[in-house]
Image (cartoon, rainbow, N blue to C red):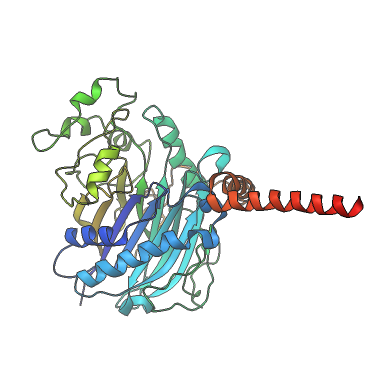
Length: 440
């Protein structure tokens, strides 16, 4: 009987483009162990679709999520014929998360909560964080709680403080509430509509432990964070000739850049992602690749021939995966990360996808027992920021703004939206001429 839950975490900035599922699945399968397959596959997606479709949500996003459904299906077939069921797909604007469970383990998922927060302009979700918390039954009947958050923080080298503020606002305003939907399906390729306030594909269990909203940190849950956190390797933009010093394979070592990585520094100083850990980075920077590199990536699965950087950005490890280890009141076991790497560049993005394979002990995290354990300075019981009591109201206000921006973007930036505008104008002119002719 397995003693750990094997979890595959993937983060990818989609650059608002449709995924090529065959290329993605092939590169993902090549990076996975030949023996065994993950129990859970968790996806963090940023810039999942153009802003018009992302803000309007609903059926506009189906083609984008459907590509990832197909990619997981293909990758599962390539690693021993594993079949996965999508138990939740959720987005807040341009940031999304998806969870797939092995078909034979679907019934282990007892309940799901979900939430999201906008971190962009006017608290809209051109940048944001979205996630879910699920209850997973383990072999002894206990319930293992797992929280997964997909995030996209502020860009640009000089926006370090803004990124730290994005994390703080994620802790303050990302709140998990119960979801309700129709019964799950075992059709691993079928795509359900995914909307900004999307619901899980599993019904609430009657033994749901708590129907009250829950914040990011909770004493009894594991926590995984993945996304384009956008931390850079410099606080200023590169000079016009700086690109000549950027690392190139196979002889240039990117480790000097890693020494100036903002996230590593901020984690050490306890100014962001409080309590979270990251496995050692052994792969090159994941951003920002040139158009030339993206064109070459369509025909090249190698990781050593696509270090062709954009000249106006420092090569950086923007795409990261972090985790919260077992609490201080549990003295046995810890999360093991068996693989942390970047996949080859995709032809549709200037980011490389990043994956982590984790072994999480199949043990429920107990609540701290007694005053002594409760007083321990653990981030689960002493979060770095208090919950914003106005989190729900602020999200509703931002959502109304997103609908307006989404409609404007749809009618001005998309071909179908422009077609509707042209049709309305032509129809109005024809109607005016018809009425004028009748009157005259």
